[in-house]
Amino acid sequence: MPLLKVNDIELYYESHGTGDPLVLIGGLGRAVAEMRPLINALAAGGYRVIAADNRGAGRSAKPPGPYTIGQMAGDVAGLLTRIGVERAHVLGISMGGRVALALALDHPKLVDHLILTSTGPRAATRRWRVRVGMAVSQLPVLRGENPPPRHALRAQFQASGSFDATARLAEITQPTLIVHGRTDRVAPVALAKETHDAIPGSRLALLHGGHPISLLPHRQQQFVATVLGFLPPSKPPSAA
Image 1 (cartoon, rainbow, N blue to C red):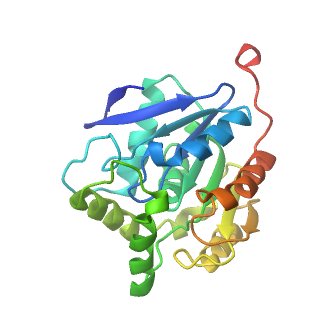
Image 2 (cartoon, rainbow, N blue to C red):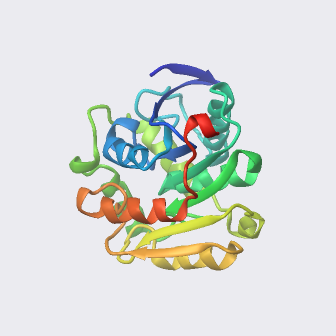
């Protein structure tokens, strides 16, 4: 798949499957290649899965920081415009969940259904959670062959840590599903409950497992089933 010039950088993206578009936004330092099993499972559910490496990750450009979550949401919006997608379901994981929130708030016409996974409207503030988050992001089982350089990982981490959409959650009008691990030590489950309480009409699904419930093989089947059970049936391209 190509590199596209979006805003001030080049973004690497992939598109898999057919049907209604479903945008997948990865977490801290996460590349498309590291989410391949999840992409394949969602595409097998009947959706066109569009996934891009966030600025600072994978094969996308890695400019010096600082980055912001709003900036990364703008990158996703620009990508969708470039490839002709006017509206899509959006699934964000961890830091990607904050990018998805910013996308829904700042570009609401682009977002159909919103799925927030292992995330919250702000990052956890305790220093030990910061260390755990960095450690989880570097687990060999979740890392591919193209890990981000330190400056880019730090820029993403600082962007995620400085973002806070708590006061704007009531502005979310899209149907929203919040999926969270019951034993998440990076994003405390209290953040998921807070998000659920603040977004009108949202659904909360608490699953067995911790922060990486969407990426670990033994948790992924339950996660995918939960997501597909929330999304409306996808229309084949000929019926779109």
